[in-house]
Length: 212
Image 1 (tube, one colour):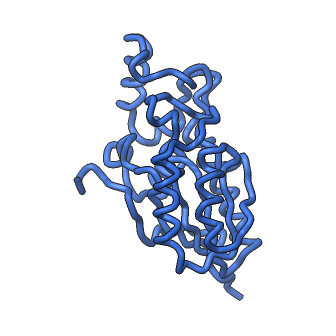
Image 2 (image 1 turned 90 degrees about the vertical axis):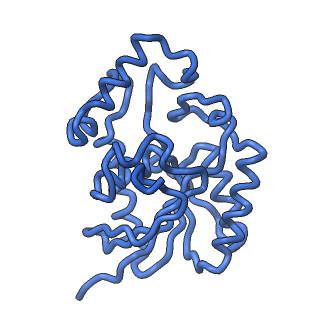
């Protein structure tokens, strides 16, 4: 008997204080800005009629707070997990893009010049997480929740780079189509899965470069 598919609303957090400062946040814990709180409230109103059955988020405060604001409309408690955290950028976390040295900028530029498959596997530094590692923990989470909540609608609040890498992994776009700024704050996509196959149904606030 075929398992009922689970629907995930996978949503990026609102603007954080780290976003304002243009800091490479990674797993550093920055709170939402005032604008980020407002963005979350606006998205909550838009999603009010969606009958969420459960709410999950990254345990980082910018994602957790966004999820709490949206989940409040549905009287749901938010369950947090490290599986939905942003990529670990190791020694580069906390650096402002304005403070990148020439050597570091060249390192990132060379990384972005790799083909998608190599880019996903490449480790910038021993302290950094690869795209493959990030997507692996994300898909394990999705499969586990799909098995536990068949036929349900799940809110999952996480981070931009995590979402971007999953979309690339699933073939929805390439890294050149999905630039680092392609996923706006509180943007989301709807994913349907039975725990084995993954299908992107629709997106909101996510722009491929050829769509702009």
